[in-house]
Length: 223
Ligand SMILES: [Zn+2]
Image (cartoon, rainbow, N blue to C red; front, side, top):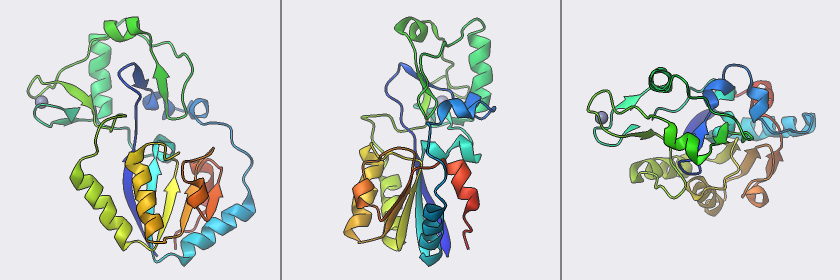
């Protein structure tokens, strides 16, 4: 069985949102993960069977798998020269530019997003690109933003090659990811979904598991 990973879709809801996934990876992860029912071992067996039967399994992941599974945080991107800066490096520059700034969390979303007041946003000093002085933005796809055509085609190719699709840690609310589910459905691929809470494609899946990715996936033998 060959397992290939597609895109990781991360979204933010406009400029009044900061992502706190760095804190998430420091051990307060429980704050960001919604409550989930106890592991259903029968469902785990069904997922194991689903994966074992697959010869070319495509895994599409969302924010629910990211830091919980050790995937590094995103890289904040220069709009002018394309330079990419690791999130950890940028964090140090944030702290130098904003020594007295601290965000007060007003309710954290499962993906680590936190809403900020307009005053907090306005007072925050954003560093410019260290290479060219250009404007930086997180290297993620925002609501209303477009995924680059080459990335879309890359995933469509992976869907065409796959014989089954596993969605991990995404509610598929954003069309950027949902469209690949529709393509998989047209191709009549069996679809399994691992996500806490309902997704946009539950009715298209032959198997749905409401469990934490980090708790369930280590139980699965990929071979
Ligand atoms: Zn630049």
